[in-house]
Figure (cartoon, rainbow, N blue to C red):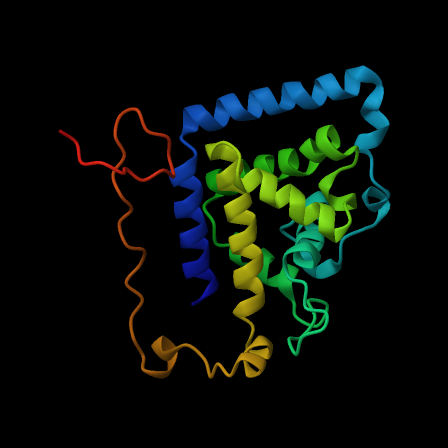
Length: 216
């Protein structure tokens, strides 16, 4: 799957989980929450030693905060120690994420940038540190908590995971240990047909939840 196709899949997940009104309400609430934490005397906790570290030259298109977020996410979400898989420091995970994000439409990319910032800073409330400063085990717990949260939290956790996982497993260096010889769509020259339609939602259902009953 090409970076363009991965970007379309990520955009579909994002749009499915976040209506414009829901996203606006969430960002306003999230900004207010971060401001309240700062006003309570915890502003220093929102600073990170990584804030002083420049991003690599190849990371153009990612903010410094985004670079460090995905760099932390790759360590948390892809623990390869003790396996035959190549370490995430040997696969250009964050560079592949950057490439995928580069194919997103600017309005969606801007929304995602806001979401990533809130995901990073919200960890201060629960763990006393930003996500970029969490140890791998705590970072995984943070992802698990968001995956069980409301529709917006689940959507953002899913998007980050999808970006990181696809950035790793799309790299040919990860294929030999699992005896994968590449996608047949490329070997056979099959055309990409896009994403399958998602289930319709009832008027009172949250995005991302499938109906369990037929309408009467």
